[in-house]
Image (cartoon, rainbow, N blue to C red):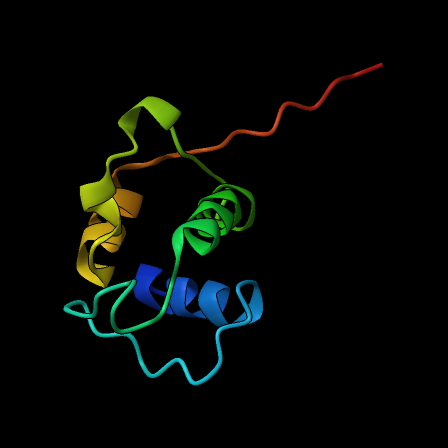
Length: 90
């Protein structure tokens, strides 16, 4: 069974950002007001989205409106391209 983006996001918040008491994520939740995510944590979250979800996050497409609610972040994640791994044959 494939894990939803919402579930993956919640897992990143708990495991990587070490957020305590993260309830089941609701799309209407505000990242800052409801979850206590500050600007440094947002930067960490972007890195974890790239690394752990293997997605490309283009810096020129980052807009503050993406990081208002869980819903806006999930919508943004759904637009991202997968990162391809290049294997060199030496």
